[in-house]
Length: 430
Image: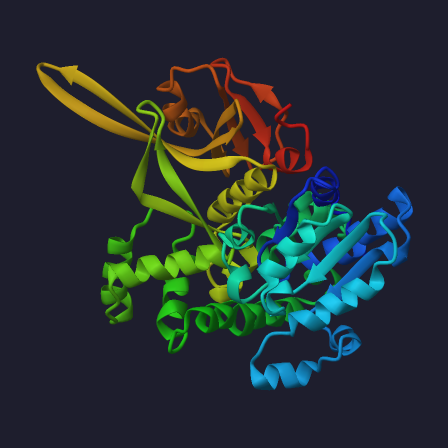
């Protein structure tokens, strides 16, 4: 089933011939290879008019492709070695026969020996435009761009947004959201017909792919402790936390001892693997960051739900996570806002902290956003907007509610919008 991913195609198109290596990153199974090898490849041929003989596609996890350069996939895996770069470079050289533009589309590039030097060498050729994807090893890390000595340009691919998911879903918007908030947006799930299929797929991915990648990359002895930490983080999704709090949780709930230093390292591993994303607290009035506590969100809510065996489905927290991912998908930097107020009465000063679910920033744009599953009465409205009442700048303040609602402004000038209107309206912030 073809799923349009126009945002990412646009991201690639505007970077064509920019003198940098286009590095497509993202969590496993998010659709990186499909984007490059199918969607972008088709664009080059059908829209730009590039001949297939000027597009060099190569996947370093393909037995057929490796055979073309005299390598054997099984031998490479058995010997735990990289592909000989000289063989690949010879193959590319034989495919170039004029000075017109050539497009290198390279998949699982981390399996190529000295891939950084090889690609940086091709970058010096004026008629080469280079696109790569990868996983495992260095490509699990969010700092992958440094591997190319500042010559990399990252395109981060998320699992399907709700709008992308809906485009391939056969059913109502309401049913689609129920499915999306339960199983997430990994593209392969769209073609699966039963809950059993989807459940087994997600549980297998988290156990046999994501955790295994991290354990192998960082040389961990096993996945027991890091797996237990992932369980704790899954259970406490979208709540404020810090390593010290998590250390105490391990002692009280898991009867296990794990240091806050190790916990912090493991969280960094999850972030580097694109399983989790950290949202720091931002002091709206003081205009500075508060390092701890922070919030952790899942790149895909289906993976989170699968980790807990689909036993802890909390609509409010899932909605908050989905909004967070949508904001990041649209290119925003997203923080958790805190607004401190001080009031003095009878010589006594009291402090109150009000939370803003999201402070979304993109260039000169800034939005304050509250995620509210339901607002049944004025008391709930006052609670949700108390932080807005204490922010004295003019940036737009938005409340997103789960139930369908007419897009409107309150008497305070706060914008109110339904969740699906927000998720499906690309021009929402325009």
